[in-house]
Length: 227
Image 1 (tube, rainbow, N blue to C red):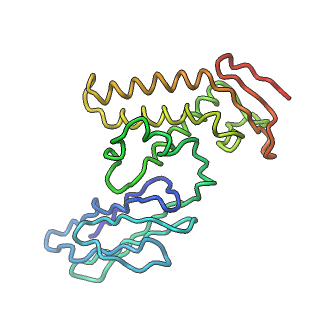
Image 2 (cartoon, helix red, strand yellow):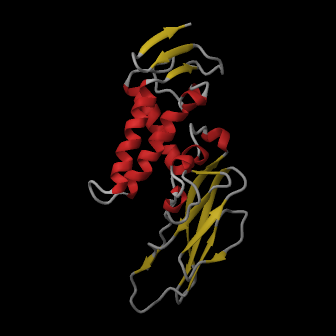
Image 3 (spheres, rainbow, N blue to C red):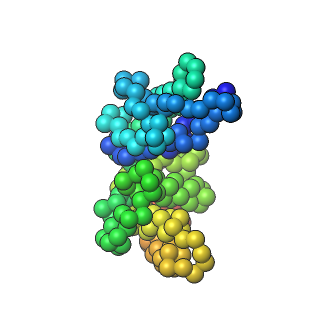
């Protein structure tokens, strides 16, 4: 029996490098062996042989949900397995910071990008989630009382420092493998800078989704000003 496993990121941005990881695929019949593994990155692409590495690094040039097909051959007919990944534009992703914001703080930062990627957009996305979770925890909601979407922040510049220092803290937390090592020290440093940036943030919000600013908040006091 063949078990095809396709490990993917939760979401990917157009032109960003991602890894279609099939290394966890396996068979349970000891008399057989995998003789061929091929991956089709999307329904409109052709199959690519990945037998040697069992993964494929790829970049999508058009947005939309992508269906990945993994084909595994042993001593019988090939079997196919499928998985999906959403691919969105930078505009739809609406990240609050970018690699251009964080690299000036750490010249060798790109040396720490994980295998299969060529940017830290995944970490900027986590930072975005943490910003929005913080606002939700402070009961800063939309007009229906629901959690704000990232696009509710009218001017990204108002959260850029908050996001970039949050991203740097996330990166170094992930690299650190020992309390007190140089990476954990950097993580604490950037966490402190993030908290300072957050405390001084004054945000203009669109809470009804019409594209226009309708509320202001100052994080320091969590004082809501309704216009």
